[in-house]
Length: 114
Length: 114
Figure 1: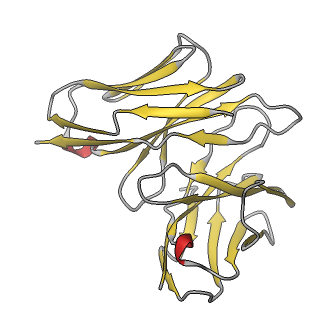
Figure 2: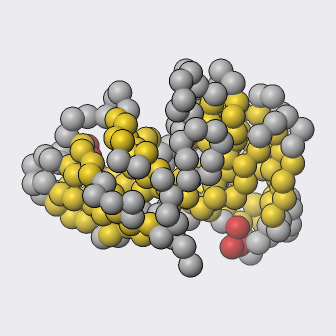
């Protein structure tokens, strides 16, 4: 089945230690998104890639960066995690950016910062 | 600024007891309204997209409706397996070519007791 896969499902890191979260998709979608979701809160968009074009949300901290080496994979890098970065990180994909298009989510990675 | 408010925050039902969840929204121009289901520790699962006032969509025990100001998710004769958080999100008609952004509500936590 076509899907969005995230690895690892659970990640524990130490305060200030860089961490990378991975997302892959078999849907062959053009767009890949990263969201941050804290407990009992709405998912918050961090950034997205349309093909190789990177689009950062205005309020996304510089501590968060992303890479998309090919259509299938996208990475979220947190350069110096703080305690406030502990959250569920969700990857999503869609076929296109313009127009109405459904975003499909992966299972998420739960990040714990010690 | 686009806003989405979901109510109630939590809803507890007995199996078979029908009810409705509300999603009120404020957007400059609605391109689409999305309903997702999210199980604990997992990513959102797509349920429905609604595009215009008066539109309705059904899936098993769920029925989504849309007006110009709000959407309802009606749950008929729910079962314990319907227990989850239900998220509502809107996609607005933005300027320029990029109308990608989903603005989510915080969700309604539904618990169905056997």
